[in-house]
Length: 224
Image (cartoon, rainbow, N blue to C red; front, side, top):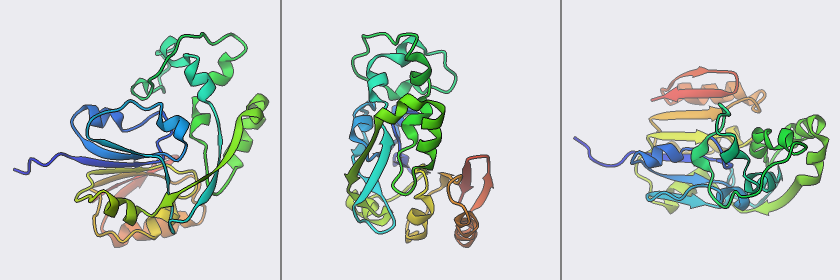
């Protein structure tokens, strides 16, 4: 029996709904997040590499635009509202002492806005600001270093990928179409809702690699 630990790669973690629970159950892995303020929020677990960079198809530098929700994180929204069904409480660390007041609560509850950072489009950010206009003051653009997926794997001498998750607000196809597939992940979850026509080209790649897959509203699940 192969006793080697299972391994995951998570690209675009934000600081919620992460693979931290896998790490807490004995997996090793890499978590990649270009926004350092969010990466710092993640719980540190032995066996996990935390990379503060982006993944792209060409490995060049990119500008990423995002909504800085860290103010609400630090004010302690999650510890006071653990009953929220979509909150991953494994993702939050730090000093949560100040309460969220009634005026701030609707914005703090908008935890999905933390995951809207994109190197290719601000459409989802614009939609969020339309819903909550005060978020406009929290929009930031920074330049980030990126690696290709091939270079990330080479950098850390990855030998197996049992699970790969990619959620990068529109860069998914660019990453996958430039991957060499020398290591085929056993199971993948990849967001597809921003792929546009590239969605069908992505399915062609999965077919050519021998994956069985199915789609849900936002994600594709693929098994090798």
